[in-house]
Length: 401
Image (cartoon, rainbow, N blue to C red):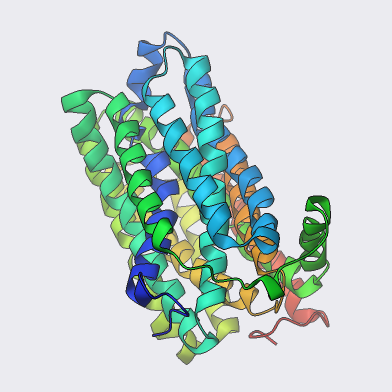
């Protein structure tokens, strides 16, 4: 397996670094979820205010993605990655020291900007360092390793919260970032100066426009990106559903959450096995159909019991985690230049639509479960509409048509 020019990290070390950086986002969201209901009491505030620490993180991570991805096309991957990781580490520590909810929200915003840099630049490294024939495998491996994070994060988070309180979860994140900084120091630059974008900083951001005007790239990205919304809606409300609605303990909730997250490991594996046999079109047809079915099952049966709720949502978790490496591989193949900008737009779109899902998930539904089912079914319908338009148009998408 390639790992172009990585004398110190090697291909395996590079993959581990990329995977850990992609684990940062679910860890930043999921590790302190078991404490979210309790934090409303700690800070004497409402659920909606505490939810800003989730939604705000996700939104400003999108901003970081959009800024640092194109800048890495101008200044190189390593300087941007070092800057973003240091920012993430410092403000993770600031979150741990937050004296009030306003300070916590502000620290989460700056922490999120660093996380956005880590996500955008690490994805660009995959295109920089691996040829197309192995890129699919690397994307699947990174995705599989990354989804382990939400599987273990609530369990570890509940354990940490029980022993040391919610602040300790942010100290753990700061320590992980420090390890990433050490690895980035060993990273050898993957974008030669001859291939970087010249001109001003503002000019480098034009790469976003150059990528976005590729209609095949943009249309396919929106089609698959809409499936991020219902998954992140689940992230934002699942603790309330399991702990408040079903009256489970924080520890019991963490087990249910971990089971659902464990299922997402199957997605990248199924992607590698099924796409070559089924083809991209049939794969997408099945993915959209299963998503719609899961949404309808949640609406009608999700409130029966926690196990039923889990079983209704779990197939969609597998689908969403399979679609992500499938779509990322196709989208990266659409571009020969401005890879940082392409990576930024891919991750930005998923992040923004995920943020929208988090807002919709907590939007005052009479039942969080019915609301989640509605969001999932609606997202599947939008994905189906985009997919049909793409197939019936003359828009070219390499790898699909």
